[in-house]
Length: 234
Image (tube, rainbow, N blue to C red):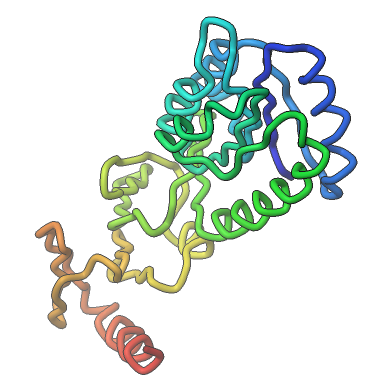
């Protein structure tokens, strides 16, 4: 299910997009529309919705769609932005932020299909590398490539990334089923992302951050086998 937001203060253009999107997007989607940047950002902050794709008008009255997109990406980095505008003067300023596409409103029918097709490809690739977890009924979407290691402590699992840490109640076996091949269980309480292993000894890993994670005796043979398989593969 693709989750889409339209942020457009002009009702005519907003309704036009609402009519056109179903004509080019043939897979299931949920569409939400906002006439104000503030309402869109508050929805993101409240975790009421996490969007895969956003159609962002650049000229939003007193507000800047570019500034709103920058704030939105800080909240939801995996979100894809398609800028729409009545004015071509904004082509240069949009490069201040990450975005997928720019559509000049008079050419909306011509380029909407191309933009959505590109968005679906990127979203599909990103979702295959995203770990979705929840904590206190709030969902988090974590790029797996950013995960350093995962630690189980009593009834809480801590996920440590390059910049942040997250909590979840999910157990390590459940998380291992979701994770890609660079992750390795090295003891009852730890999963390590081999991307960040700086050195390996039979009894421990040292991560690029300097963190030392021990390898329990019960896991030493399976760790060695997994590493050998990866070395052979590459």
